[in-house]
Image 1: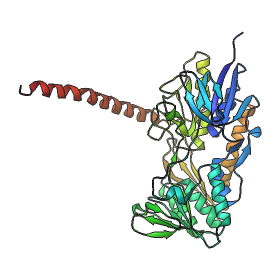
Image 2: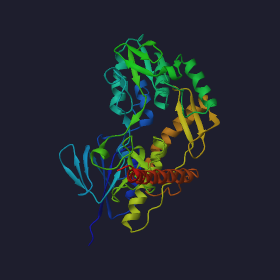
Image 3: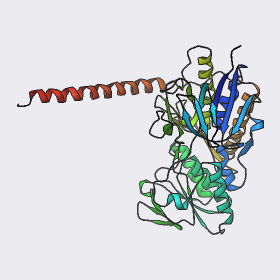
Length: 414
């Protein structure tokens, strides 16, 4: 009798849970999910944890299929040749196939003083630390939020609605993803909440001290409490394990999400870089990439050719405190369009998205494989072809350069 196939998923976020649940479609597959925490973290609610309106965690028992074995630990190394994982507990786990879904988190702060004096909010522990700092800071303490992407905008709005004096330092454009119409709505709501928004190229932060934030234009802002949301990074597990990654550290894969180094390793979510053209970080792409990573694994187990990935986007939703929000609609290729929904309806839609995302995880746990139709971005094909052509030209130049140098050497005087 043939042994069951061992499939291990690293990371219990949106992509990892979706992948693990779908793997239970087959009775001849043993599924192990390795995650450093006992509870699922709702990353899209971490700003609410900071503001005190939600704990941003969900019990895995409500969203994880019963056939999935949950191991609470951290993977410290991937031995691709031996198909083994080393854990922080000094134990090892064998796999036949591995789904790499380690997610994303805070990036190393290169700005002087940021690591020492600013509070990031990309993980549960970071958000909890900031929550404690907010709770103990005087009511009059100035709060400076650095970074005007979704995390920065939502955290600034949440704290301002709670009565804090907040300055949002954009370091560029407010909400870079947003269409100008949606951006104006966000700016108006932040102004109504009392948030001071500083945007433009001169608002890049050059230094963070214990009580100030210094900008490129020479200004020094009071920063008794500085929140850092400027940029995200991914864990360096793949790179440390000798696997090919992109500049950010995401695992390089082909269009089936299979590692360019090993057909037994498949990536999903924020830590995947298919064809070195990764999708926007976030749960919207993660809940699509997770199941498709599983489909690639199941195809390989069945001896079939895996299908290329298909991911489409609907837009980006932002909460602006508890009573307002914005849903910025987009084309399927993730380009924002003029259409948006703001105000109270925008807040309701954002809350609906948050709840429905958790329900989607739970539904896949009950009925693995129920969702099989993926929204297709018809613009990705041309992008891939353009990148392939660029790669071919670069390779041709690299090949021609030594030949040209040899030719010049042959013509040189003797």
